[in-house]
Image 1 (cartoon, rainbow, N blue to C red):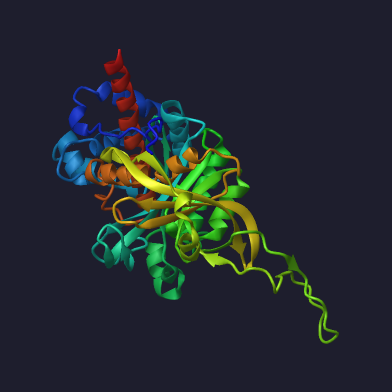
Image 2 (image 1 turned 90 degrees about the vertical axis):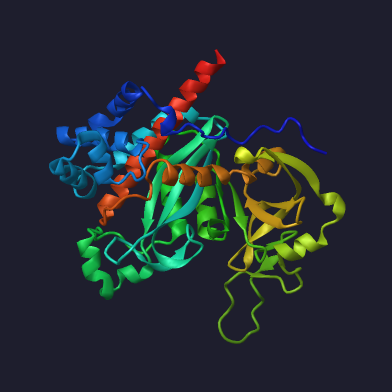
Length: 420
């Protein structure tokens, strides 16, 4: 049976620059919030130019076209904006922290969800920071690209991007890439970090700042299969609903463990092991095959602009596996398509007595970050940058995040106006 009281996960962000005639005063007021965080007057001026440029309705929002549109054929202005984005030493951390405070005003909700995902950027040549032949999600194949990890926020009020990290492949930390690292300005203290650990660092930063209410973290199996990420989220007091592969192993009940008895030979055992007669851990696929038909319940969920979708869900309390031993008690959330029968699996550390409709809602919260990428790339020039440096990549993405936050703020204001 469908649940008519199921609330949408988040309203769709459908405000675009084409809708923004006559909003320059609003943009200036928004820029003024962040302006004091730029140390130099020219930095403040070029930040306003760049934000305005990202919002222009032009075919490509890279530096030269946006400056041409706003300042005419001024080569000095082009070079100044290139220097501002790619080289100028302004600190973007306070700017992002202020963005989080603004997002809290516009979208903040106690049930807010932090969503992690990667987004890739095809690139020509080998000079850009972090570029390498690797799997490129945008192209769906291995290609020359840069890979980013992003954090979004979603609530019943809307969604936007919060933070970004550039992923450097492990090869980039070898001697072969030493000159390229130096040329791109990669800081000496940057070390190889996996994508899930980059995501955890962003989550930790947002939680530590304390400006943005949130309870949940969602992500796909590229992140859900990283146990260190899940345990790191739990250590922050947050609840995850993370997709995992069907080969993930769990116990239906907590197995007995003990230190094995000493045989009288060799060293005495000191490591706890699962008791020999304990039931083995099952894969998610095996557990799904064992479920009775009555275990499944039909729920509806709002996913993006597609409208309400129906899916069958099963909820099973299981014991997670940690290095071959029983770990935390968690929910295994199973979601089965009513059209093709495909089953997706999620693990959640939410409390045992939680209402399952809350788990249903968060299981459908990946679409906001995917829509953020679409808006970012198709509307705000997220992938149109031509800077090659470490600093330039992060500066550009920071300003894209500010531009997206501006769209979100305006959409909220327009909606309130229409409701009067």
